[in-house]
Image (cartoon, rainbow, N blue to C red; front, side, top):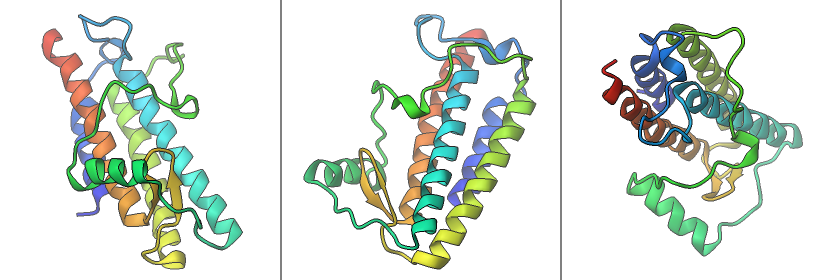
Length: 176
């Protein structure tokens, strides 16, 4: 299965049954952490950022010429090969969610629908880029260095799962 379609399904299962009040819950022991809405907003920002950056490469007509540093190669090994996504790092400002709750407040079904649409849109951009660039690294990630389309898909799956675990960690103590 396409990793982004798999992620879409997993994300849907994690939030679609939540009410508008439930998506605004934060971890009870860490009220300064993101609520469920902010976690999904962060994911949506990463999807639009990746799409826009890939579209920029497509407009230029060529993949990135960047090469990975040793620290990026190490990070890539840990994340993409070993599947370990380290936590506790602040998100880059470009993909940091707003602290202001949504107005109007949305429920989990609406949030899941927005995530599905964003994933489908990004998947279309990635498919087109793969047809143009093939298997070569086409765009650099700030921490992982230049990634191929296949690696970008895997990154988003692992990143999404990292945040889905956070969503379930918020849900668990509240019993929903």
